[in-house]
Length: 91
Image 1 (cartoon, rainbow, N blue to C red):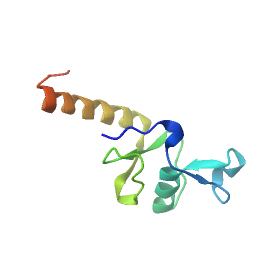
Image 2: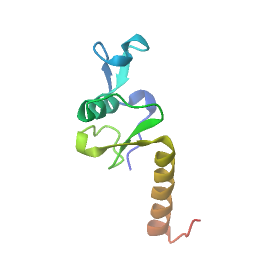
Image 3: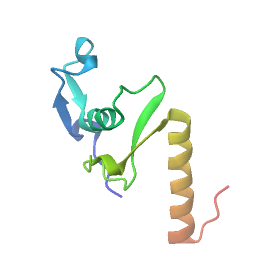
Image 4: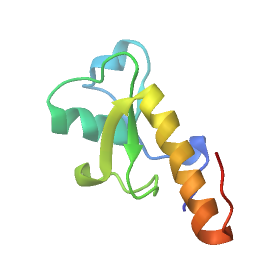
């Protein structure tokens, strides 16, 4: 699993992005996901990197989901990792 500090995540200059009036820089994975879907993210939607590599922003590696599902997904990934690597059963 690759951990990238938030400030090191790939960003793009958002000169033509719909959020331009709010901020100048936009995370690359958000821009790529929005272009692939043909619409901006809705409130409460986030972009998840399927292979956990935060610098792999190919459209096929991005999953748009709700914030709640994203939290659940990371919890499930942690439980499965603990079970596979350490034999630990986590509720």
